[in-house]
Length: 319
Image 1 (cartoon, one colour):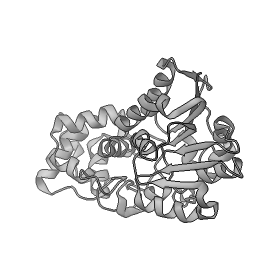
Image 2 (cartoon, rainbow, N blue to C red):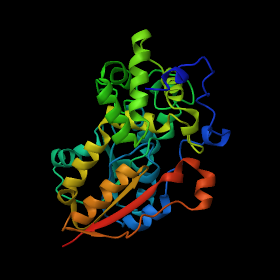
Image 3 (spheres, one colour):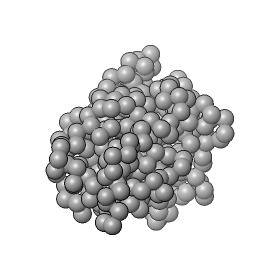
Image 4 (cartoon, rainbow, N blue to C red):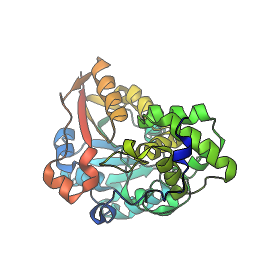
């Protein structure tokens, strides 16, 4: 690379906190995204059976249970043990109307089969990283504060972001950043990581963020987001196999829903949104309810800045 010398200069790297306001950092952890629009499209009714495939802290499930009272039920799937524990406590007042499984949403069909449930009236996925995860520096999802390079949604998984950064080849790293982060500087970033890890193991979020900031010439730094944002997104997707899991779920959704049953999926980046859009469109058993995705309004974004990139698509099962 012709400008490698400039990239490794002693100039102080830009702080990973540079592009984040106090409002974004302190956003409450209990705000479900696009709540009203999701409930409108999911249309829960008394006596219905629904699945929240990404239970999180239970915000969407709580609203579904309230709307489908007095006898509607929700089964929550959640692979983050900490979130599952908190959501279970939150939803305890609903008694037997709520149940849960410590599983990824790609395993919903298996989970329902084990429960001897054939089909359900509605399915919801909110694919965003919750504030519980994002704001906890020990989880390694964010460079807002220094922490270990982990990024596992489920601690039972073996591969961490640290393992990928320190062991994958230059080409494999570049592919992750390019295909999962849509990062145009992917190869440059991968080259710098390989050089830096030969000097010292890359094991923290701030270390990686500083490497990325040095790798990309200042003129190519984005104005609205931190320079490492896309690379961190890409790593998280790779660690948790998020697109693979989403694809598996979308391929089984018509085996999960009853005729007339509805599926609502909230995505937060273009890779997920395109996958949902085309899987819905190409499935002859689904009728798309959202010609264009529903997006948050100005007031919701003011209240919850992390909702700004959310898109909601919905469909129902024909028959």
